[in-house]
Length: 552
Image 1 (tube, rainbow, N blue to C red):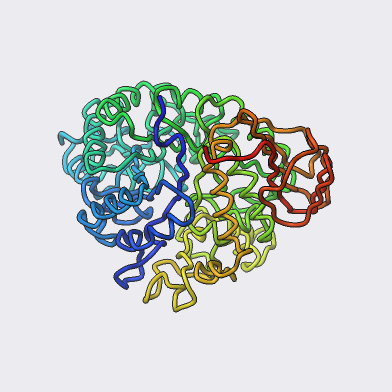
Image 2 (image 1 turned 90 degrees about the vertical axis):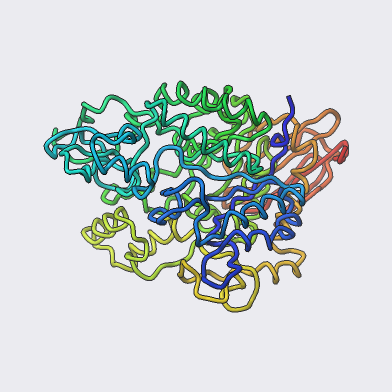
């Protein structure tokens, strides 16, 4: 059965950073609505919003205090309803990001659960241990233990995979599962077109009465992901949940964040569960460049291109559903600076990724070549893991500036800087100082790039125009065998053929094409096409076609 999302071209918006409409320095829903013509002209047809629900903003909205209200910094329910309608009027769809694994500690459920050990909401969360002793040595993704003391003073602890202010929900409780169904029903009834399920792979936990083995045998916290990621109960509990939603809304789109999922897990999760999944396994760093004396998290490492090719071909050829195609999101450093180190390379990477089989997700500002902000101090990150890295770097003799440069290049927070609209104060994002400040690297704004035919913005428009064609939506995919200096694949639909070829190395490379009658459909950088011989200079990319690429 065909669905609208089979042809989705998704644009991810971090609401706080896209457009401020009321002059408080924080992006909002009305600001997004104002920019719908820009989104339409870019060539996308679906918008994914990071969380917009009421939140104390400990984790920028992923700590939800009320799933049924809009955070006041972003607008009102009327603003959300107007945005949904405006997007639909523009023939565009809307996905809301929903945290299934946890809430804020300010959520009424948790407030009640920690008011008394006899609370009817007590079993909505995970409590264990006694006399102040932690049940195990499992570590949080945000640093430290997954356990914090029960505010009731019972001597038990509550479980949180992320920040201490973000307690995990107990999906083993059927009442909790029904409550989350009600939340999703509410928003689908409002007219949204789908959900991006945050951290769904973590809703099941192994038995809590076991430590993760360590060499020393002590109780130091260990991020024992095998105990709380991708367990069998994830699908057991989500299957009825999804069936419930799809029964009433059969055309809704479920996009799941399966950060650590292999292609085997991706296949399992897209078998009558999620319609598509996002994995972080695409991007394999060259581990040979790692300094073993430092935590790996904030070491800028080059891409292992062979491993990347292998991951891509596996997902392309093995996953029955459409793979998700992306270079960046709110949880990683921006692609320009992380993988691409020039505008030309960034253009070529867009060709490489988005014309493959699958659904593109463009992270806001990527189409301009936006890079990570640069923060001046480690405290600007407000991140315990950054403090740990800075201390380790200092012990190894790095200066504070050297260590800070590494964190700025790799951390996710600087990737959430304000959108660059024009040359006015604060780049047209706001009339006031933005909520997130840092040095912005020289990047031409939307207003400037609109006037430059060779700009990154115009190039993305051309790439996405190609992506809308049947050949790149429906065509077969074949990764071609080449040297380590290039990434080349073929798309085939009936008599139409396209070759996408990108130079990923530092040297020019010459390829032998499967035929000699190709024409150039789109290119960036220097290349030479002579019959069935294609020569690419470093960082160049081309799309070749034959048999015509038609819109019908």
